Length: 83
Image (tube, rainbow, N blue to C red; front, top):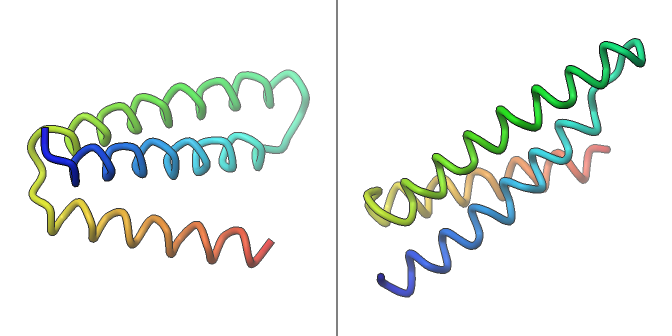
């Protein structure tokens, strides 16, 4: 596996985990419903993250991979600075 794929996969997993955690923490509502909603959000987020990491590690070309990582980093910087 090429070195850029390893680095991009690691960055995808790291940034994805931060986004999943941020989305799970941001869920509000009644306590009983909140637990279920958080669990569903976490499972969906982790499944999508696994799919994205698998695609980055195997088939996506480098231009798309780095464009997605750049966009994700920009979204995270805006999200965390705004809060």
